[in-house]
Figure (cartoon, rainbow, N blue to C red):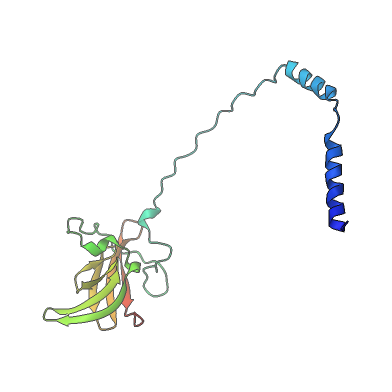
Length: 175
């Protein structure tokens, strides 16, 4: 016989020997009967919990963590001039539904009515001119050149004022 066959035979024979015979479980049955007869221990009363203070989330009005801060130089945040909110009565344009980060400039067009920027995003290529709006933060196109679109966004500073934040989209030459 081969060595592997001898090992399997020994393992099978050992398994059969371990399965045979009656076992005495009387001590286990006695212990379980004692446990069943004991009265259950009383349950502690539920502690009363102190109410927690209400937290009101107000960071929705602040800039996103991955957006550049509006600044004058390298000092960081600069408080804007206090003024009313942006014009909420102005009809919204289609591209204001999307974040400005979703768009890339893919070209320009010059027509009789001026220069247009071609931006790809939101599933299509869109044509914008100076004065059109883009992005969720009241972004207004302020200039269009052959290689860049300049946008000024109006963002709250979290202290009741509004800041103008310049953004630009450069021409993507690899598209």
